[in-house]
Structure formats: structure tokens, C-alpha cells
Length: 290
Image 1 (cartoon, rainbow, N blue to C red):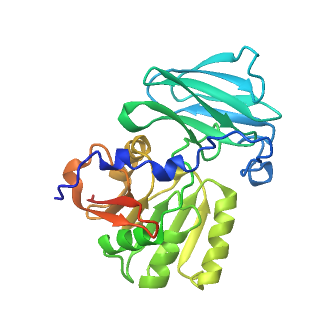
Image 2: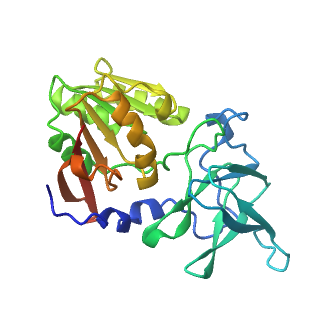
Image 3: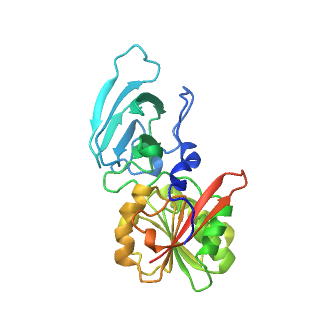
């Protein structure tokens, strides 16, 4: 068992913070557009969605960008609830952290989530999809190649492995497993745009015969065939997925997480490592055995 501090991962927030739109700009445009989502399920082009994935109600206010003199509208969002806010332009959200009011810019066509961040404080993050029929497990933040390589090495991936990547993004983990080790892989992501990117990347790497990609909610996919599972989810999302891993994975299956532990699996942790990426940013990798 490694002596890597349990809370190291909670402090490594730079990659997630990088996706927050902290500075308002009248020329900024939303990256997640309506053509990538079903308007009935995801976030519309002229709205923002905010979900509360914490265990407590969150109070916040909203006002249009550039309307400093106007009184903001106040809201309280209960746990597990998603709220839609129609808006033609950028909105400014305000909420309390450490007793101070913080403000950030929110952009139409995007999903956001209140989550528990560093120091146990609530922060707002870019969300994944804004869908009411599926839990928003994590924003899309790619795993650096150096971390991908370490995750596959620690899981002892080989030609006989079947790697399931939960929230596969652009497919880089299962593609690397196939290209480097000849392993088979299944990538799962709820975003159709990400799955299209996965398939294009697999074709470019010439590993289409070894990998499959599914546009699906991770919580609704059978994980029992996997010999290795990889994730880059936030701690509360790892806690949510944990019972599913316990139900569906066979004893001995390895689970590798990037940056964040699986709460409640302390006794299942068999290894951990620290990896520096090309920009000298430190990442943690945790290995668990089912």
C-alpha cells in the first residue's frame, strides 16, 4: 500500500479549473452547441443548465452580463436537481465560498454543476451534458499521454485485456491500450460529439478492430466483461459509481483512477503513483483490485 497522501487528489484541481470560464467576454462563444445534443435531453443553445451534485442545497444568484446595476435573481437549488435558465447571452452567477461571494461567467449552450471542491467548499464547474435523465459525472478534461501510459502500465494491460473507460472523452485510453498492447477496449461517453471524435481517432490509429465506443450513460452500461476499468471522475462521482463496480465487476478486476480516489475503497487500493506531464503538472494515479 502506498503512502501517497489521501488528500493529494483533492488539491490537484488545476486541470478542472482550466475549463471554468472565469473571465467574461462579449465575444466568447459556447463550445457545446445544440447540434451535438438532443434539445429535449441536453442543454439548448439559448439556455444554461445548473445541477447540484452536492449533498446540501446551494444558494446562488444570476444576472445578465453588463447589468451590474440590476438586482440579481436569487435561487436555491436542492441536491440532485437540475435547473434550466433561458438566456440569450452571458450570465453572471454569484455564490458563497469561505464566506466570500464569488462570481463567474456562464455561457449559453453550456451545462454547469455545483460540486464539492477543495477544502470541502462548494464550487461551480463546467458540466458535461445538462441532461435530466442522466447524472453528470464529470466535465470533459483530457488525461495527458504520460498519465495514460502510467495507468495502463499499473493495470498490467496486455493482449488479453478488455479495458472499459468510463467517460472516455476522445477515446485516448482505450486507443492507447489497443495500439501499445494489442488490448481490446470499450469507451463509454454520454456525449455524441465525443464518440464521433473517438471513432475518428481510432481510425487514424488503425485500431478500429480492437475498440468499440458507446454513446451511453455510464450508470446504465453492463461492466461485467471488463478486466480493467479506467476513470477520470471526481470523488463524489467515484463514490456514486462504486456500488456499480462492486455489483458488476468480477473479483480480481483492476480499476485505475486518475487524480481522484474511490471513497470507501481504501482497503482495495494496491498501488499509487505520481506522474508529471509535459507541462510539469503533477497527477496522481490510484490502482484498486476488486
